[in-house]
Length: 165
Ligand code: ZN
Image (cartoon, rainbow, N blue to C red; front, side):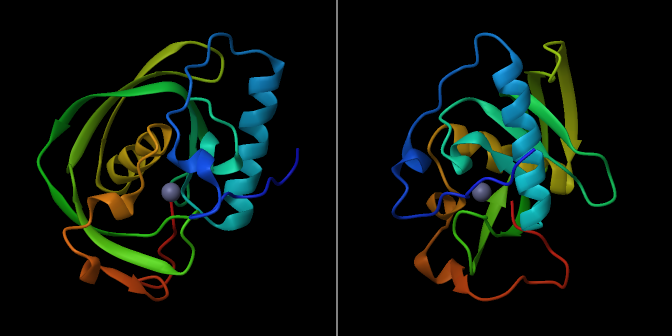
């Protein structure tokens, strides 16, 4: 496994591209997933999308605090419920945190790393992270959802231990 370079705004244009669907989960996708998990863990994040490591494919990895990491291929949000106020940071926009609204709950359809269809019902941080990562696959960043520039702060995490996505 290898730690990959994390792309950043504004120089890495891949962050603004719509990522392509994965057609076959082959050895190169398995390697990409392993490297993304290692990169996410090394950076201390709770999620990472393939465009953040310069690969324009619809692959994301997530790891909630205290839980095992997992990967989703071609994820799609099929349901959104409610609303939550969140303070979010992104590994591709280091040093900033922003306040925005996200759905309180989401249902996501995807393939797991073995290609098996899977469905995840999530709320709280996992719902927030799923939305954030799937946004990355569409070239969208959390800063696009801010109501105003005053909602973006150059600062450390809002609470100790809060991780970027
Ligand atoms: Zn991000």
